[in-house]
Image (tube, rainbow, N blue to C red; front, side, top):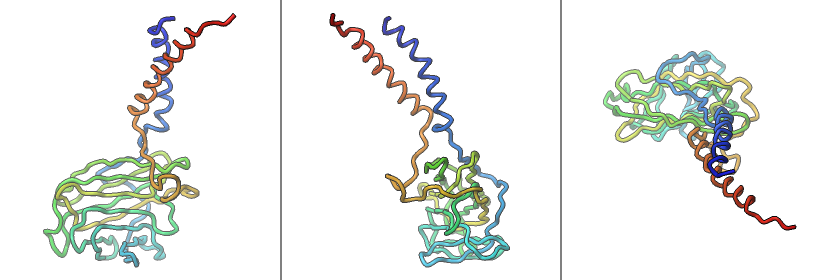
Length: 242
């Protein structure tokens, strides 16, 4: 059989292998949206922890912390009800993680704004990126980054799990001269059955594994075709010993 005949026979098989792998590896199950979504819990107050991070507590709850907000600038707490955080100096990085005792979220939503009540000129408009780390089926993965516009007024954004993932970290980073003065309207939904998953620092890399794109899988598998053909040629040409 000629090389061309083998290639014609192998190509459909490789395509089927790619299709079979894509749902588990290539699909991004965390959706980022620049709009409000339905959540179960509003963060009504914050307390500043010893490390300078802000611990968000449920509105009307028992005072236990649900999420932790860490930024690259000192934080100040403002208001109750729909509590918000302002920066001593406009900040460019925000990290949202579960508080102690909380495994993770199915939804994380908040509203970054480039002004703040103490200094309406704080921060500047531009672009920011969102990246989510999550675990699914015992694997710690990542989704994003995805770019959004930071404009004057409302900039509510959310990371939403669509297939049982547990969000363990949401990172907000600005680009260029963009900076943020205020963080408002934190809302979350606690992931159901969020137990027994890995945490940061476990495993060989100590961090999330990027979710491969379908095109990457296709290229990797397609590259195996010439190797298989070369092996077939060697087998066919090997002399037969009587």
